Length: 205
Image 1 (cartoon, rainbow, N blue to C red):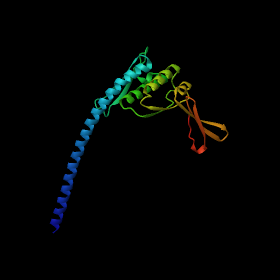
Image 2 (cartoon, rainbow, N blue to C red):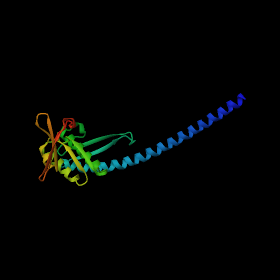
Image 3 (cartoon, helix red, strand yellow):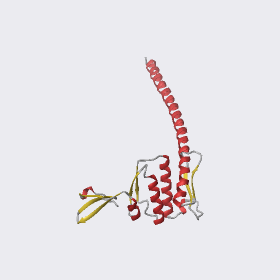
Image 4 (cartoon, rainbow, N blue to C red):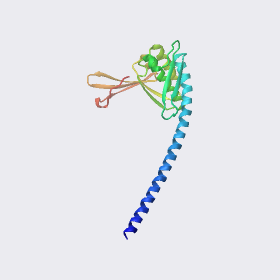
């Protein structure tokens, strides 16, 4: 009787072990398929972003050259290096560029990704802060280029960027303790409403 109990228990555990081995093999097979598919999709997308990045970088900098490089054999584990050379310079690493040049390079990469996978909305927070007037103009031309497919919400203190917008939103305090949210649509329409202090969060025009 004891033997039959032990035998039954042994058979149960043996089936459980076989199920676990089978499940492990299926999981490893699924992981391998996912890795192969993900690697192929990553390489394909990376190649497209790489081409667009070169094009947009050249447009924003009005010359120069840039590239994206994968450092390593496995695309799922490798690092991505950004190499950029603005016109008239011989830089290789983005870490050697000025703050404005790095910001413009990041903007070029952002729009390169957008060309591969467009989005209906984009929020940009002070991305133009490090840019001088000439670079702001290039940035705004790029926004205009993408505005037919994406609605941009830009948080900025730059006057040129504000002037280029279709609508302007800001917070004003004409009376002490009474804040107002002001909105203006360029073209003559304007509206404003009082806002309670608890509705407000730190914000810029």
